[in-house]
Image (cartoon, rainbow, N blue to C red; front, side, top):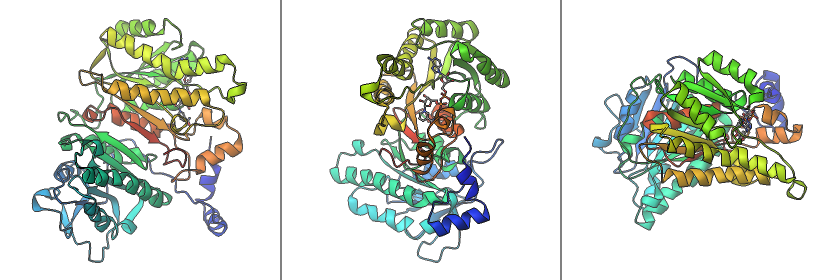
Length: 468
Ligand code: NAD
């Protein structure tokens, strides 16, 4: 599971060899270190198109970091009232810029026409080369479907193509670019998403669009442990991504019920014992599983706050060679079981107010994959389920999905060498992700302050070339 090439090209000899052969030289990504690491350090430059409403809220969020914040003073568009808090110093973009930036953040919410896109160019053109390795580009626009005027919708939709292209340009330096589309008046709901996309927690999330809806402003009592007092159910928790989700949610303060098949009980128990959680041996495709899970929750807690449907299997065969039980198992584990568990928990009022449901899709569910008609159908179905459920959930509950790309786990270690190497390199960051990258995105969804993040499918794939 170790990426030998990534280590090799980061030796002096390997770097020279890769350069002379024209091979990719990925930088090892900087990930979140435990402890009270600030979400962003270094210099942050903020700009806004005229009338941008998110920018002053960005000031509040950035004010909570030790970052040195600059605002782009010569964008004709940045008004005094929209300045980014007291600590921001003006920086003239037409002067020679000596700074290097850990993050470039642009509030495009004020754009009304496609001509206003020029403000995006004016901000990024002189600064993009000043983005530090592992830097972050974050653009905030308005949800195009909420724009009545076609010209405005076009301008905000244009941001998607812009950000996806920037992500491809900055990826070789280990940097990312992402877009937040906010609903009208949702500025106050941006905080947890801005923190996530500017931080090392989103190291393997690039070229993505996340939607943030209008909700009441919620701040966790302890930002370092935002999930304090929450109970999380994590399926498939004995290894791989599931074990990492259990660790990450525990780090953020949650108590975890880890679930896995009875045959994996020994491994599961090791994971949950180390985290002070509880272990439940259960096959989620068993018709009694929803009742078994509900009974277990009632026995130990008064409900759950976070339900993470991580358990998944692949049973690959080309369609004409696929036995029916491969089809049935794959749909049952990856898709149908999730519906039945959610139904049972909600019917029995075991999913608490402001609860979070997170499902795991896959880029195979978005792009399709040779030999995976069953798995791709299931993971695509997950997206349909999340989008439909997002319109129905009540009591502050949200439901979202992550769609991982190539993640270094047992599942991908079992792939043939050439397919594994292609999976690792065919993305803007030229490397595979780690289980913790998926877990961090899930922790962002689970944050109480992410109450406006609902119905999203965010890929954790280093901007894989596969799919859109
Ligand atoms: P993994 O095989 O290492 O772990 C999956 C876990 O699910 C195992 O512990 C397994 O025992 C458990 N499980 C399987 N069937 C179950 C059942 N019927 N009841 C209860 N538990 C069951 O896989 P992983 O790589 O950690 O993947 C985790 C999730 O991420 C899966 O949903 C997978 O489809 C998805 N995913 C993974 C990748 C990747 O690159 N690894 C990419 C995209 C999506």
